[in-house]
Image (cartoon, rainbow, N blue to C red; front, top):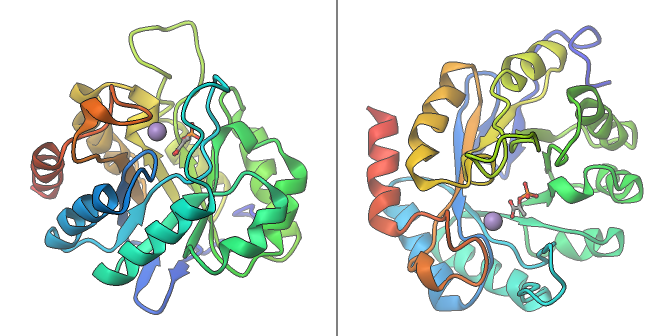
Length: 259
Ligand code: PEP
Ligand code: MN
């Protein structure tokens, strides 16, 4: 069902009444890696609003490599994200990791993210397929493009065709970057499917100095949007402190991209 052979026209993902993604409509998703506090999310949201943008991300359920690392604020994090989003008129995106939380997520987020570590969690994908919110599906850590497309197929097979695919880098032998951004995935996914395609420049590169070139490459290869992490004080961030942009860096990033 996600194949372009079945449906030649681009799918447009609608977020609320105002936002459209795909078929020439481009968007950005910015926000902190983790929701840490109201003040932290509010500072980022204000900067996003000032740039005239409309979407805010923030992780509440964090799938961390170590069980001893910050695991996110859970439901409290979703509540903060929603409160800040409503205050600034921003649509919210947050990751859900448990199929039982998909229903609850409807009250707090406008877009449900399925993270890289859960791209192969078929029960979660099926539950996302029964959701009435758009799904932001990230490519698995070592997933082939075919496996990625099949993960989207799991979602659409249950009735939800409002899916945004997100290339976020894959694991290779290269260590210069956190993951290897598979930029050719963008035109391949656009060719093989009718779904909008995003690039996550933060987790794919893991390097602040590569965020801008990676974002330029994303748009040059036909991406419908870019996601990146922004934190008011990255050095003190409870997750991904090495790679989030501070607010002035975010402002120059978006201005350079617009040029
Ligand atoms: C995220 O976007 O918050 C995240 C954890 O990314 P990924 O699932 O791509 O590692
Ligand atoms: Mn992160």
